[in-house]
Image (cartoon, rainbow, N blue to C red; front, side, top):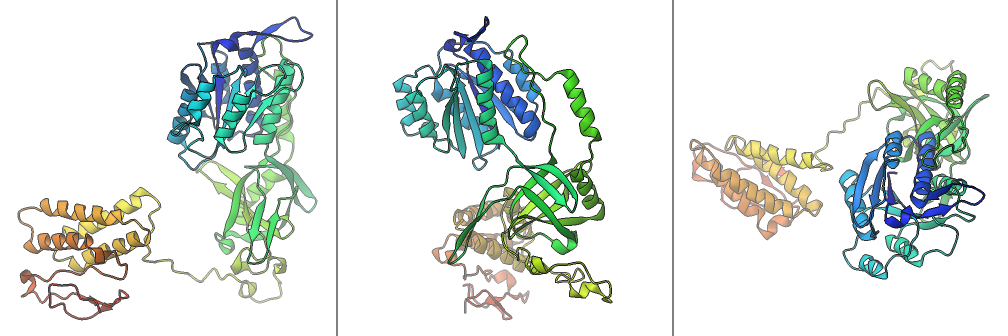
Length: 519
């Protein structure tokens, strides 16, 4: 889940904060940078795939860094920040919307972490955020968490109202004890463990086991039937049941997919030496961790290599009556990952495999054990269908260009032209994309004006006829078919056009009138 860290750099953040039992004095901005660095350290160890963006705000906002996984770059830019003028939330929240929508769109959930000193905001600013057209709630599935870098005290009611306006499962976090670098570090660690903690469990196969992390963490799944509703949760152990060839499994329906990673060694936190703006692990500890991690055998790595070489998947059980598939997936030619696909709960999540509890080792005495297996790899199923699927814009453009290619070859391609036209028209009506019909009519009219001088006269007549019919109310009926127009240029050519029934089936007959005939 992408994250946007928004840091307050107003003048109030430059105020000194006295740390109890210490001779050092830090500003609120220094402590805030210290806390954000601790969050980045956590992500660098446990959530390496997390994208993080950094923004600062006062009376205006600044995008310090767009979304990146290079946490060292974020730390370097945090150390260069300086205080500015008064703070104002509305511009930066608008900027958060623009940043997330430009990178991820409106469907990707994103977390927004606002770090401020909690100085009382103006009620007029809260009124502006409550009006229609304000940046709250976010234009994407967002969660706003406000971290207050201030001594313990009552929660600022204006900040609490801002979180409420953002909706989602947001909150306002503040230290419980005295404000110190350690207490602020613990606060950000609690935030990280709550929002970014990956699932940790044991991957077992017989007497082999390995501690692994699932990213993202699997969520409880609720299975709803006609008369029952049951919620399933992934247990702490992922047990392997057996191995199946990839061709036998295919692509069954899945609940979710997760990246499986070996559990990393826990780093030793080093004390702050000079400034709270950085938290570093001693170099000797880092070298020791890398040295030990490289020598420690991992069953997770062994399983990944075996599945990749043998082209097989591992059937595993994650909870009672809930199964999953472990397999090797490559996002490029040089890198592959171990993935876990959670199937739908139940003993029959893959219909062509049958009841999973009845699967076993093939009997070597059978002459052909493949005959007893539910899946027959030799059978080739045909998936060639005339269905129209417009998932991407390029698919719609391809279908329209196909119609235009046939249009430029009229009258030889008359039957093909009207066949493709009716196919796209029926798909648009079925999807409720009625505006496509008017747009397609305009395209055909424009194509008619662009015809070369040597084009066949029937070409312009057919294009004009098709454009006019697409604008008629009766063409909105999916059972109706746009038929070619009979012209005098076809009289000596013995042209043959299909009549159609109301269900769209063709009849082998000749069209003798200029009007479409529907039986």
